[in-house]
Length: 342
Ligand code: 13P
Ligand code: SF4
Image 1 (tube, rainbow, N blue to C red):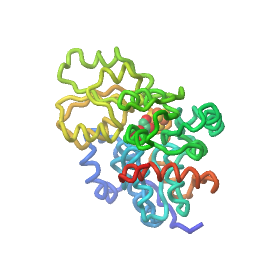
Image 2: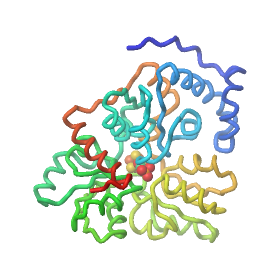
Image 3: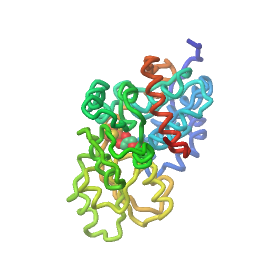
Image 4: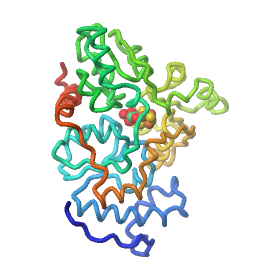
């Protein structure tokens, strides 16, 4: 392993305060001042190590603001992270998100080191299905193409025809030119896609443990007393919740909506940190903040990112035979976005 210079004691010095002051200026209305002396030394040290390692930090939209605005070089929804991972020149990718996102980055960059700061950062959707389940479905529905959400293991991606994310699911399903498609594993995303296309979908009963907790009554309660509130919802929510929303889209779709429409008051029916991260860019928008935390995303912290860069752990590996087949599914998805399709 490449040797790395010794880590200084993490103290909040005047030098670190000055170096991180521009970041704090941006995030000060979502991160209390009292917390900054804790975050700032980690941010400064992570920045130093990123340069030594030629590393890039990719962060999902659900990462906490001190990560998202403090150390991320690139950020976005699952689709953007896959695209960015495919394009980076860095030697090391630190994926601040959940395991399937790091695996996707590794599948697209077999020659690079891809690190995840906490190996236990999983996903209830990814855990709902195995490669053996997909093989059984293929036996049951011979000839029917299989689309799998990227929120799955590499083993599942290897068994499918093409991947999709919440941002491109309808486009991917329609790109196949089939009358019937097996759509895995998110039942609610599948139900939403079915409302947007004539393609018949065969669904699996996987759910996101964060989005399935929202209820339609809860959404109505945010509207009562705030007639002007705009409700943006992620398609991993149940159908009756989506029926109450003004807009349904991926995490980046929701961010785009706020930027384009600049609503005076908005509620994002998704993971907690989204509103904090978007509020940094839109101080004039009032965010009503319902809070459903993703416990997996929240496993990633600044100390763990630093440890990851210091020790080059945890390196994500995918068996070459699995990676090769999974890469075909991910690359085919990326081609649909470029208009190559079929
Ligand atoms: P996005 O691709 O919309 O960011 O969704 C990923 C995810 O895990 C949502 O729960
Ligand atoms: Fe998985 Fe849901 Fe967490 Fe997204 S929010 S990573 S879908 S458990």
